[in-house]
Structures are given as structure tokens and as C-alpha cells.
Length: 124
Image 1 (cartoon, helix red, strand yellow):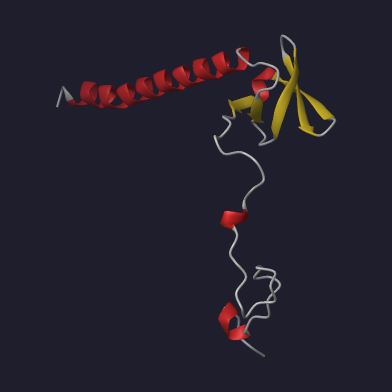
Image 2 (spheres, one colour):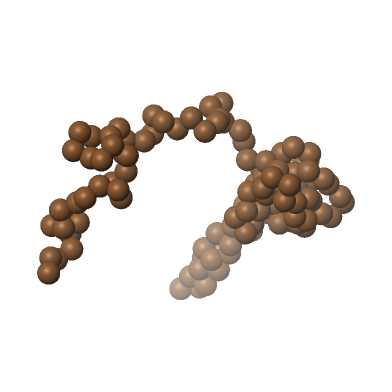
């Protein structure tokens, strides 16, 4: 019974210590990424905004979020650096479904006339 309290204390403190170590490593990794930013890098902010770095200061980053739209952010708001894929561009024709002979040729389900019983909604 005397060993129960120390074992319980260790069982609670060890996971807390390990979690703090993991969090500190993540914070250091993020700080290194933020300090290594370069002009032209594609980034994601903590609020979910994607942008391209166009100017850097000691504490701020200017991001181009659309053509000729530049916003200023704190470096601490940069969450991650976006890695460019090997296949970039707007050629996404392979991902779109082909138009079926029954459809109106647009390839879009929204533009087709669906049977109300197929939508899962009750009919009137």
C-alpha cells in the first residue's frame, strides 16, 4: 500500500513529461521553419490562408494571396511550408467524370435531371 502513491504519481507524471517534450520539439521545428522562410515560398497560415511570400521582415511576412493582393502577417502566424507537387497545373480532366449518354453532356450531376426517389428524399 505504501508503494501505491509513488507508482500512481510516476504513472501520471511520465506521460505529462513525454507530452511536454514532444510539444517542445514541435515548437522548435515550427520556429526553425518560420526563420528559414524565403521569398517565393508557398505557405499556410494558422487561419488556413494560403499565400506566397513576397517580402520578409524580422517579425512580419508579406503574403500574396491573390494576384496583386498582398497582406502582412506575423511570422508566428505561418503554420507550414507548402511543398510543390511534381504534377502541378490546372490539368484535372482525368479527375472529372465523363459525360454519360443519358446526361445532358455537361458531366455534372447537378445539371442532370434526377429521379426524386434516387436522391433519398420523400416525394410529395
